[in-house]
Length: 272
Image (cartoon, rainbow, N blue to C red; front, side, top):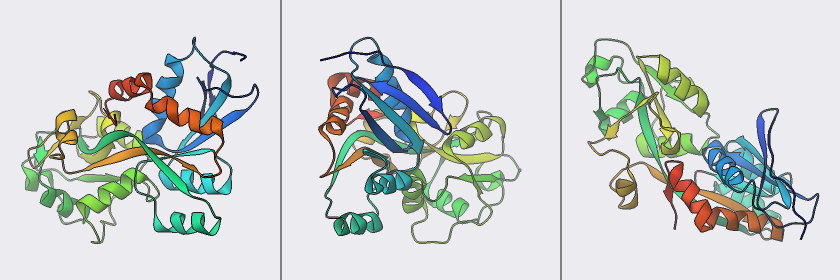
């Protein structure tokens, strides 16, 4: 077996990296989809940098739905998702005589976040529903200062956005006033705007934003594991019945003891 160095570089709008995967020299395995898994993929690759490396794995961070579409189009080998498989994707896979194999690799919470100076520390599901339907106009209605609310959401094709919408407002009509940003941009805006309210993957949290509890329950490993935290989802890798052995080895890498340790270090809950 030949070995080469793992490398990490930036592509336009994408992160390219090599991971420890057994494959023929020159072959690449492509992953595309949820940005919630890109950081984990990067860290797994870095941790393997001096150990393995036969193949290049190209990771393109976008959103869950584009990743699944790329999987069915044959332009990616593994889709990274942070939501359930939409019916339209199931239908397309069936039409193409493909079976989808969904492998959970981490458990994540979707967490409401505000500026660190915000006096509010917890919101109820009822309050969140009212906010995201446009029925709340001031922080004073939520126990905060008498100031307006800047409501932030992620793009509709984001698995995180879908999980949030399903849990918070269901089939109700979302607020037309909400500003749509990527997860990275929501985090940046909340970190600088004392009036902003957004939501992030638990793995994206740090000291630049303040995580809010929901109904008094904070998102922790314990509350995610036992189901007390109300907005949680699985992060998964999706392959098909036509996927290569190399692609399946990448999935196995995420599920290895080392890979699951990286998941834990990233602030998410290992699936194993």
